[in-house]
Image (tube, rainbow, N blue to C red; front, side, top):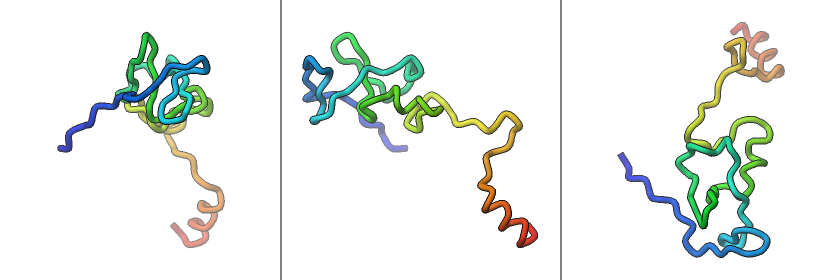
Length: 94
């Protein structure tokens, strides 16, 4: 197994606009991010060094960077199927 590198915000500077990390203003994480291995504490707040705006990542469902959640299938137990691909499969007899 490969060793995991600890994620840090080394070189980050707190400004009036927020946390400036590598030229990007970072926003604090949202509640849904709690429990993720990527979350890092910095001066009484927690930030995600992978994505600057965590709230936008969770806006349309699950964050694809989240280490504490799994993408689940639909409520019917089936995954979404592209209708065009489904029609081509049906035409081939699959």
